Every structure is written in C-alpha cells, then in structure tokens.
Amino acid sequence: MPQIVVNITEDVTRVTVAEPAIVATNRPAVVSAAASAAAASASAAQAAADRLATELAQQGAEDAQGAAEAAAGAAGAEAATATAQAGIATAQAALADADRVAAEAAAAAALASETAAAVSAAIALLAAAAINAIGTPGAQGFGVGICPTALPAGMGAMSGYNDLASANYGNYQYSDGSVMVWIPAFYYKWGTGANGVALNEVLIKPESFFADVAAANAAGYALHRAFYDGGAVQRGVFVDKYLCSNNGGIASSLANGIVLTSAQRGTLATAKFNSLTGAPALNYSGALASAKTRGANFFCSSRFIFSALALLSYAHARASTNTTYCAWWHATNNFPKGNNNNALSDAQDATVTWTYDGNGTYLGVGKTGSASTLAKSTHNGQASGVADLNGLVWEITPGLTSNGTNLYILKTSATMKNVTGSNTLATDLWGATGIAALYDDLGTSYQVWRETGADRSISYGAATQVFSEATSGNAWNWAGVGGMLTTGDGGTNAFGNDIFYDYKPNEMCPISGGGWNGSSGAGVWTLNLADVRAGSTGSVGFRAALYL
Image 1 (cartoon, helix red, strand yellow):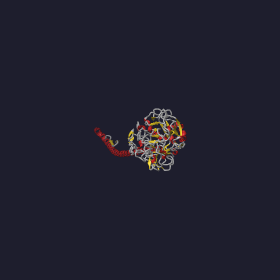
Image 2: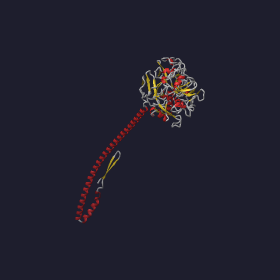
Image 3: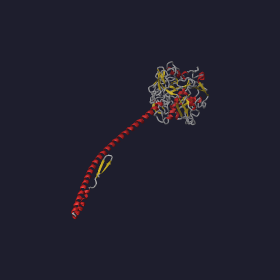
Image 4: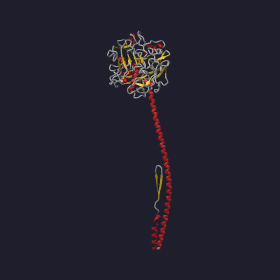
C-alpha cells in the first residue's frame, strides 16, 4: 500500500507518496523455472505455464490494485493536502483572531488602567480640594482653600476658586474689586525632636482632622492663634492677596496697585492713608481706619495672620523638592521672594522683578502684585497665594504692644473688627485702658524678647529649638506671633535669616516683612518692634483681612 507522509511547516505543506516495489521485477526467475519444468514434462510445463499464468494474472491484479491504491492514495494525499492547507488557513485565521483579541484586550486593559488612574486622580483632586482644607504641604493648592459657609455680603467666588490648578483657587472678590484669599483654619505641631516630630520640623493638619481643639491639643497639635477672634474659634480668614492701594477712596487689594503708605512717597499724593475716604490719620494707627473704607467688618491684618502665612510657607518649603508647586523653591534660599534689593528685584533671586510704581524718588519700589512670576512672591509658591509678604513695604500688623516697660500680647477675646487706633478707649490698641482690656501681660522680658535687656537686631533660626510646641497659654500665643524661644535665634537659611528687631518703645506698633531695600533681612518672618503708633513713613503700609 502506498505510504502518504504530510509535512506541515509554517509556510509550506509538502505531501510525499512512497510506493512499494513492483513484483514484476522478479519475472526472469519465474520464467527460468517454467522452462526447466517444460523440459521435464510437458504436463509439468503445462502445469508450470498454468501456474505462471495464474501467478502473472494474480500479479497483474495486484499491480492493478496497487496502482489503483496508489492512485487513490495520491488522490487522498491531495485531499489531505487540501484539508491540511484549509486547516492551516483556519489556524492562521484563528491566530490572527487571537492576536486581534489579545490586542483588543491589551488596549482595554490599558484603557481600564488609564481610567482607574484618572478616577484616582479625580478622587485625589476632590479630596485635596475639600471644603475648608488647608491642603498638603508640598502639593498643589496647599495654603489656601474653599470658604465653608455662605459668603459675606458683597463677596463672590472668582472663576476657578474650587479648582486646585487655577490661579484663582481659594480666591474671592469683594464688591470694590478687592481680591482676597481664604486661609482655612489649621492645626500645627512644632517638632522638638522628642514629641514624635523632628526638631524644628512642623506638621500641618486641616480643621477636619480633629473633632475639636481639645482633641488636637491632646495629640500635641495647636490651632494657630490666627483663628481666634472675639473669644471664638474661626474657621478661617479672608486675607488681601495684595497690599492695599487707593481705589477711588477705598483701600483695595488690587493687582498692580500703587501701595498706600502712612506718609507720601515721592510724588504719589494719592497713595497715602489720608487720601482715602474720611481722611484716616497719616500714621501707623491710620491703617485701622483705612481698612474700614472697604466696609465695617474689615480690619488691618494682624501679626497672628502674618505669622500663620509664614508658618505655611515654612511647611511648604520643608515638604517641596522642586518648583512644580512651589515656584520660589531653592536648595538654599527656600522661601518666598520679594521686592527687597532696592532695584525692583529680590536680593537672592534676580530672575523675578517688579514693575516700578513711578514715585519719582525711590526707584526700587514696585507695584503690589506685579512680580514677573507672581507665584515666586506668594506664601505658597503658587499664583493662588498671598503676595508680597517679603519686602516692597513694611506691613502694619497689630498683635503686640508695649508701654515702654512690659510687653503685651492681644487676648483671644479681642475682636479685630472692633479695635480702634487711638490710646484712650477700651477698644484702642494703645494706651493703658486699651492694654488692660485687650492684652495679656508677658512681663518685662519674655523668651527671646529683651533677653539681654538691650535694643538689638537678631536673626530667625537656629540648630536648637526655634518655637515653642505649646498648645495653649502665653507660650502658644507668643509662638502665634512668630515669637522665638531664647534658643531660637542666630540665623539660618531655613528662616531666610529674617530679622527680629528687639525693642520696647511706648505705644509699640509691630510692622512685618521688611521694605524694598531690606535685602536678605526682609522676609516672611521679619518682625520689627522698634516702631510706634504715631510713626509715619512712605515705606509702611498694610493689607486688610476679614473673619466670617
């Protein structure tokens, strides 16, 4: 029988038919035997002939059968080949389908992965943009947030106020055009190295992290002093994004504004306090009445608020590793930049510049909010933050005073919108009556203040503990104005080597941040206690704030 061998390779099908040997090849031997038989006997010959005929007939039949079988085998081989080829085609089609299905599955998996990532990112953004959340240090949107309640009359949310990626995130606008930033209440824990937080590191938690202040205190966290007013916890505070400028008689927070000050600067006759509606006093105390030109509930922003912004800057600096969400980040000079080099730039970052205010005398003074990279000038390194805390002009920031002997710190029961600027009433920030009603007495010296008993200028920062970790009492209140411990001075880059002016004049009026010529001594921690209520200069202004 024929043997059919089918060889299937990837691209060719080969069929080989192997036929058996034909018996007729042995015929000569058969004929020779028949002839010998014929010589012996005719009958035998006949018998041999008959036998040969039979054999030949049988052989022929076998040959015919073999040929038929061979033919059938060949036909079968052809059919098998066709079947094999059809099978191969089917297999190849199946492989193609499998490849297509695999590709579709891979694409679906990739899409599912992308979708999951997008969902996760959306959830993270929603979580990060939670109502009244201060955010995560180092992350997008940190340091500002969304107001949790109905807005005050005249206040409206700006486009993008709830979008972490927006320059207007957490930004609101009052009816006069003033842009204000909502700073949500937050808890902090200052590191001692022995309280679970490394020395001089700080942890920040949102309002929602603890059930209440008592629970936070029990965990070693304090609600920042900026979030007490009128004896009550405040859920946050609106702070002017820009220093105040004259907007038709109103002290407004406007980008590219010419800063209002407590005396005329150069030729700018309308950029002084007494050019506003009602002609507020042309001295530091006039900042309180100037803030009221916007509305009765506005007040001159306090040193507590200024210090809270400084602390947020510090936490953001410690958590950031690049400029992605912190434009002023730097391996060494890691703090908000400002108009402080007397040449419309920053003494430690010449890449950021301000637009000249045109006063004609002091050529280094810029307009507020005019930084070429706004985010480099804000407390959180993002365009959403509070601008120009470092340099440009000093800010009047109530919260401390002195009678020339003792230091006094504002009580948490004081209501900022009600305080006044004279020195006789119980609502006045100065004078014996006001001091008795509004302040706690810290004594003739307290922590680093008057440590040596002499007037001096010292720098923020040390290798030892800088601020108290206290969660209540005078030590907490002192930390709330950015007051250092006795171990906290000496100067470090982490605090910008900012200056603390250690003085105790009668009717002390704290000013913060430094001026346009303050160089590296200006900054978000800088605090000057040498000035007084009746002081008047073209380099001292203010910004307003508003509690709910």
